[in-house]
Image 1 (tube, rainbow, N blue to C red):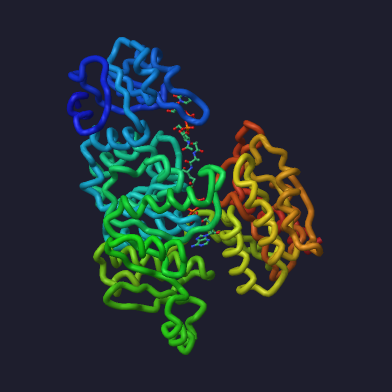
Image 2: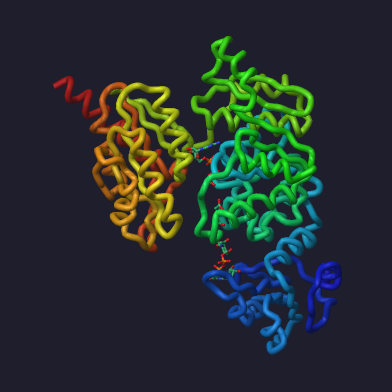
Length: 495
Ligand SMILES: CC(=O)N[C@H]1[C@@H](OP(=O)(O)OP(=O)(O)OC[C@H]2O[C@@H](n3ccc(=O)[nH]c3=O)[C@H](O)[C@@H]2O)O[C@H](CO)[C@@H](O)[C@@H]1O[C@H](C)C(=O)N[C@@H](C)C(=O)N[C@H](CCC(=O)O)C(=O)O
Ligand SMILES: Nc1ncnc2c1ncn2[C@@H]1O[C@H](COP(=O)(O)OP(=O)(O)OP(=O)(O)O)[C@@H](O)[C@H]1O
């Protein structure tokens, strides 16, 4: 596309010819190809302007910068463009350069502190069963009709616009009709979803998380709230005060879902013996109580959100409800393993206090024996949540093993001491920093009927200590330990 066309509706100042053609947008020097428009932006760690000369050597056809002062002084051999907000411009230019492909797709974007991946996968599974082609994008990667879709793009929960709109184009080529994607607060705050034609925005819940990334809880809320302005219709959690406030602030068409909203509906369900597995979904027209195949209020809320989205996409309640028993949780969410010795191990991605509470409360309500919890917290982020997660774990666990979870440059012992500050005085716990050893210790302690919850890593396949990332998977670790320990036990009982 000619620069003249690309820039015509956006405020900018240009030095050089606007007749140049550009084919791609790129802000990473290493990925620049001939014909690219290079976005030389200043980030938290690097200033892209230092790469301008190298980007031109690699074939960049024009350069965009974000500082007027720099623009005035700098001369380069290709057109130089100054824009006031370079991130907003990147989102706009990516959408426009690739022909606004989101307009052709039906797009659902999901935000919330917890449950985004789960709900995206539930919606994806439902659509697939309704014979639709669907792309799911989020923390667990990109899936085309339930199968991992290989891409070499930077793996973020919410993709950067330069990748997102190209992926939409690819999806259209693959006859995809629906795209279900996670809208992270960071993605919304950095305008990654601007100029995306979002049909339905979903608000699941709000808890304190990522505060350090955003500067304050207020900023975090404002970032999430942006999704309402970017979406044509909304699906909102009626049990969550933040989600309700989003509903009050907008005139857009909306549908509420929840668990607690209608006491009379739940009493009716109780009379039918269904309270452990019911949720309600309310639209302007009607309300339904539905049976859900998972334990835990949080999973019922996730199913209710899914139904509400499908309803808003135009599918009939009856068709959707029939499919609920076939839903499965994504990898690393309440993934349960059963030992031959009669204890159970749950691997769960809970890495916020709210998520840990949801899981442990569910476990406590479901099983009556001892609960062991193995976890830690990530380094270099959200220090405040460490103590809170400690208190939550201490409320439910009989014994806690503190370990290591992507401590990055921090000392995991210090992180664990901060977690332990939240424990009740009588809490029984120990610290085993090597994660595999911590898991093995929990498995060796457990007796018949006990539950071990291994929280924090879920589907992840790596562990980052210092600046070294090595392969590590809780799922693989538990699978091989169970095989070994069950084997040891059966050999022991034979001898
Ligand atoms: C806060 C945030 O969005 N950070 C992303 C952002 O970093 P940044 O703006 O600080 O950029 P930078 O690293 O200083 O680099 C500046 C410029 O130099 C370029 N560069 C940089 C280094 C280099 O060697 N070569 C190069 O060309 C970069 O491409 C960029 O254009 O741009 C980088 C380059 O694309 C991303 O890697 C980085 O995401 C990092 C990995 C990250 O951790 N992001 C997290 C916070 C994030 O977005 N998470 C959410 C989920 C969390 C949630 O629920 O909110 C997500 O959606 O994934
Ligand atoms: N609706 C919910 N409310 C509270 N906790 C939940 C909910 N759904 C899932 N969880 C908990 O949060 C964990 C993460 O779930 P999921 O990956 O679906 O959330 P997410 O919002 O995508 O997380 P992230 O932003 O970190 O990728 C789950 O393993 C579970 O412990």
